[in-house]
Image 1 (cartoon, rainbow, N blue to C red):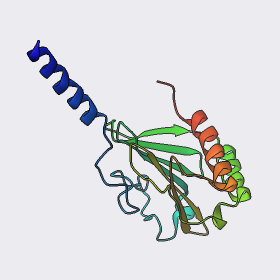
Image 2 (image 1 turned 60 degrees about the vertical axis):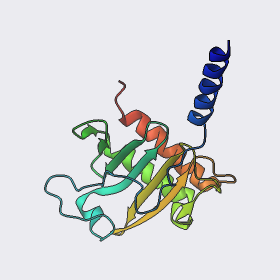
Image 3 (image 1 turned 45 degrees about the horizontal axis):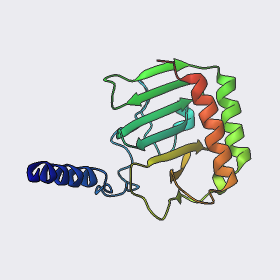
Length: 177
């Protein structure tokens, strides 16, 4: 009887430890993703250094974190190409969307007030398997990035509109698996 009680106590203690808070540090702005957006073949532009629009890169959307440690990058180009990089897949995937759909997305993002947003919107508590999102939009050859996470209270309506427009676009651009 004492052995069973001791095993039960050990089992409960292990269960409580396993359910405890995550001890990994919160993501930093520099380390949001192990996957770095790279120019398409033949493109020499470096994100943030100018020239992206001339090379066709209009938007980069990065998702990282969560319980599975997801690392995804979506590059959206003016010609309608959507290049997806995922750390769970060896190669990137390219989907061809209508260039007009990309233009509509960028216009919706601009109308929502993306370029007036702050650089970061982070929750007070950054722990516990939250997803981190970074959206970089290129205008006149210069990129502007906004980073946020799940759990932000009072997220600006303009950022919610940007996320909604981007999610709707990517849902059309992402093949079902």
